[in-house]
Image 1 (spheres, rainbow, N blue to C red):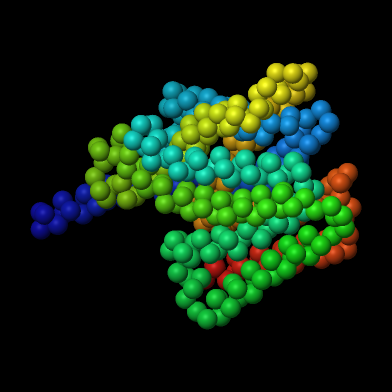
Image 2 (image 1 turned 120 degrees about the vertical axis):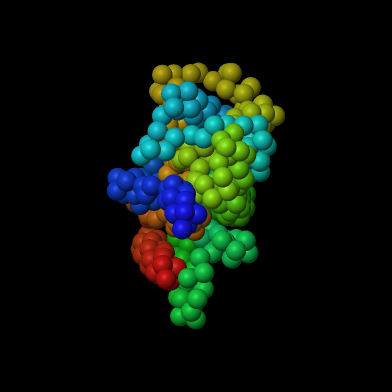
Length: 346
């Protein structure tokens, strides 16, 4: 009897406290926040990367974003900041940094491909091709075993999921078929490649979370049951991602001649202000995307990324004229995404 009582007391101690209602609401709101921040980031990146007075240096822009992310992470760790009783960042370690190298490298490749493609493509065309990435993400989740079992439990759900994916692909094709006379083939190829890298990066986020947690300096002081109940702090993945991205992006910017071009550029207060604003938006997008992936799945991040392209279609772009076919594509995209979420909700 005494042993049973001790076991019950120990099991109670291992049960983690449930998150506060505000923290739960924040996690549920992560997809919406991700959509809003991503809209601002895409529009700003397009204007300043391809404008006459813009920064035609995507990897230098990535370097600035990563440096600001590292500074914020260091401040959170130094101050011991917490959110709903959880630290904002787990204690860093060299072992965890080595395990995060694939994640950071895929993020550099993904972001670099996306910014380079965005610079040469009309935003609605870029978004239409990116919307087809939901198919790649679904395939990656299925191959890696990360797809929820509930989504594959019945024939009806499978049929609905497949139909919704086809609708999303059809919506992307309809949007691409709008009146774009000169389709940049290189930008199209880069965007399609970015879809694959995005799916790989989302899978790495889910797969590496446990490894980064086990490599934390506090993991050795926690029992196996407690380690199973712990989750990475919200800014931990961003820290390791930025730690890899900052030096790698800087090396690429140096190798591609971006830094040499920037030295001859006339800098202004507006340019510096944009770099700072873009870096803050980058942090917001990254954190919201990680939270969306952690609370839902990589597919949820992909769907949120699809929805953000809807308001971008209606913005006034000098290199694009919206058509009725484009509006039909947006409607199909929303319908396909909704069907897919319904099919996977189980």
